[in-house]
Length: 579
Image (cartoon, rainbow, N blue to C red; front, side, top):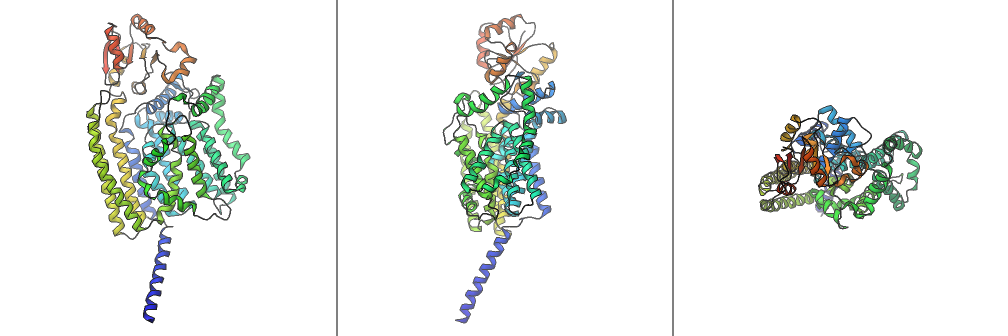
């Protein structure tokens, strides 16, 4: 009996000791500083090297690259233009950054994506730093891992659109708030973080408009109503913060309004309010539209998503009353509901919730048991096998616009991406068995698998991108422009090609359909041709001219014996010259 009592007590002591060791491991960095630096370097190589491996695709990538090219070559940094027409749909921060990139590194596809990639990469580092300071070192490492491997953040970080820049500045707004309000921070440090919070909010406004102010402000109001943390508002440094905000956000709005009296009404009423409240933009979607976006966007971490939320809500509030976990959840929920209620929906709109959810999942990941994590890995290994079987059917797609051969080419890349991800998932199982460092080391290998999956599959998408970009037509068009007089008109008949002007380095004159340039056309009507009949008259009268049009339009005009000589064509467009 004494021996039995001793054995039980000894077992309890060992169990308690193991629990303490496990909890301690859940707070430490899983790797040393040298290994951490090497991991960051490896991620940087994977993140930035492929930027130029894909062509720009319509419409966003071509649009924002062309706007920056026109800003750079014209030297007008106040009035944004697209295809030569005034374009006031969005503020200019990303256009400025891309134009500076062109000035420093030349004009090209990777340069057009560099600002987006830099903000995406910085977002990973920022979420890691914030998690380590607000929660624990292990939580910071895990949060950075979650965000870097999330397909949503990965893919949008390599796509030239405004939402990654907006999401980074909103993330900096959120993280600065968390760092400023955490318990025990010195007043001087808190003030600096809050000033950075106000500055980043201004840069968010310059990225995409009022959402950069409305979303963080509404989330903070909702947070204080839920937690009754009224003291927080005394720590926001409102007077000095507002000075910083308006000093950064206001000058461009004043200058552009002075030069363009029509700006304010179009930008604030039409683009900010009408876009949200009415279906005028023709971007509809059901109220559950963004559910699927987040499920796919955070796919590698779904199995621990619910437990992560419960873990975060269970955390005790610090002595100063500020609850970082509650703010993260309120931030995510409000942005999700806000855009779900909008009449205009695009996949990228809820991207600002990704860093907040990465912090929530990252705070829980170090506490996941080996048994649960093993089940996670086995489940995802099975999922990848099923995905590989499903990828077989990619070869069945295709039409006249996107031929079947492109899908068969893309399928090879998909198989390679899934194969690498599956191999690293199995390697993560091996690491879990063979190392004493526990779940986080295994999770790093697993996350690397999803980073590679997104990188390889994203690179393979250029099977479609090079066809849709217009880049393959550009050499012939540029050669024609080079041998023709400098004032030769280049018409876009019946539609707006979003990528060809960038690759050719030449704007086009809109004919018949203004497309999304309706506002600019209305402001400068002399720059366009309202009817095809008028264009035909100009075409016949001009000694030299070029035009781009869809194949069906070309066939219809060719049937009327309109003099045209094809200089370049593909499945989507035909470029012709006046003989």
